[in-house]
Amino acid sequence: MRKLLFIGTCLVFLTACKRGQPEQEKKADTPAITHAKGFHIEKGDGYTILEVSRPWPGATEKFTYLLLEKGRPLPANATFDAVVRTPVEKIVVTSTTHIPALEALGVEEKLVGFPGTNYISSEKTRKNVDSGKVAELGKNESINTEMLIALQPDVLVGFAINNQNKVYKTLQNSGVPVVYNGDWAEETPLGKAEWIKFFAPFFNAQHKADSVFNAIETEYRKAKEIAGSATETPSVLSGAMYKDVWYLPAGESWAARFLQDANADYLWKDSEGTGSLSLSFENVLETAQEAEVWIAPGQFSSYEALENASPHYTQFKAFKNRRIYTFSLTKGVTGGVLYYELAPNRPDLILKDMIRILHPELLPGYEPFFFKPLQ
Image 1 (cartoon, rainbow, N blue to C red):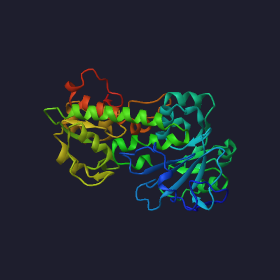
Image 2 (image 1 turned 90 degrees about the horizontal axis):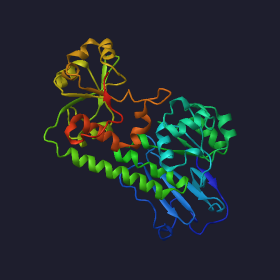
Image 3 (image 1 turned 60 degrees about the vertical axis):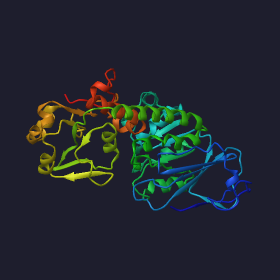
Image 4 (image 1 turned 180 degrees about the horizontal axis):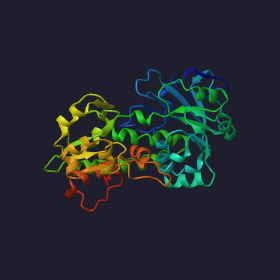
């Protein structure tokens, strides 16, 4: 990415390059990032340096952003990928996973545009969309740049699989700061959730972010401890077929971690990789025909739909015993699957759902939020 060069009045805290601020100038309240691997924050007097090291899997270039309080002069001879004036009053985000973080920080009113507003399910932001407060910007790969520039946002938080998004470059050249968010590239449940701290410095909301995340982390740890007391570990199958290929979580993936922490015997727990496995039906049947529970069968929401898609699904014990659970039934008012939007931000709810399914005696009063029995 082309670096933006800013030359102005020198700040006492930064006189050379983007990583050259004196150690003693860092504020004591620089947030601790304990689970997320893809970003780092350093706070100083009137500024925050935000470094995103993993905006997408396999990224080789780090992106460094200066968040500078309004009224503060720009540093001399310092290069950053973007400079954002804070606190931000108008923001555009590009992934539904960003929406719950804004709501948790209480700044959803700052959102002025989004590509694909029909996919937004979170209630507060949905109301803002319906009332016309959030502009529809098209698709992420082909954002309506004229409309976005007219909104005059203080920052656009981008989602990308590489740095070849020409739209983002156009926006940068037009003076709109673009900042990459890589929450989706994290590999652990709490790592994804900790990206709420990424949004905090844009709104001077660090203490709020810390409070929200600490509560989620505490609930997750409590749930994991409860699961550890289970006397049995049910065997689990996951995924479904797409064009004759069965896709299911690899053993080191985000989804597999939930099953591990819920004290389940995920039948591919020893497989390598943090993404998905691509297997044949025969392979899956051989391994998991007797699996006790089947979790997340793709987009299927009923046994009838599953059988109509392939009668071979009926060979699994979990199908015969009606022990299949899906997140596809939990939707927003416009039909968006809430799991894709909220789940990365609330791993504590996912883990509790898993425990209630696998060890119902451990959480007798808990009503699953995302995962429901297949109809």
